[in-house]
Image (cartoon, rainbow, N blue to C red; front, side, top):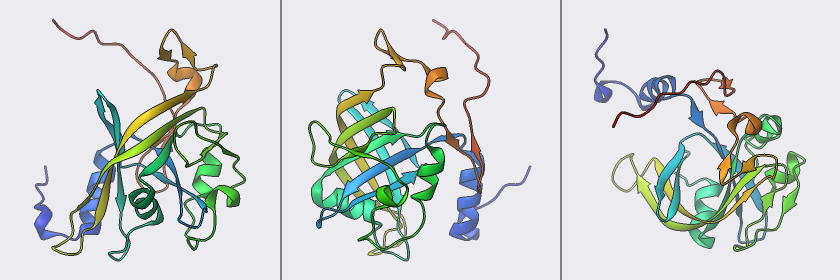
Length: 203
């Protein structure tokens, strides 16, 4: 079994090992609002739950050449964003929003998605998502890289409103088979929910 020292190889090589090992990864499709009122959107697979009390999620937004991406910059200034859960019904549109475009271009409009007002924050969501989470920014933490030049921004968001489609929701629970979530693998590969099994936790 190879034993690889992370300090002995490039960040790109470490990235390949991480995304090839830690999978499947859930995808957060995040909308933010620029200072000029442009609705930006992008998918992120460095995403997970942080806490249930209060409900909090984390999204790691990688920087490009040391510069913050629109999502981290807008979330940091407005302190609000919306997380949508990626599913089979609109994954092609989500993929279209990953195209690099100038900040004044709305990826939501570019992908033909439908903005929908949020209830408790100013940032709109998209109607195509069957689960969306209105979030306020708890913290934005620059991490990694080297001193004075972080490689990512860790966004910690507190969920202030859940929106769940009626077809997914029953007795306080979400039906994963009805949701048909999409997860990220490595390269250009994605995965569907696949076969499920049950293990009872020991007591």
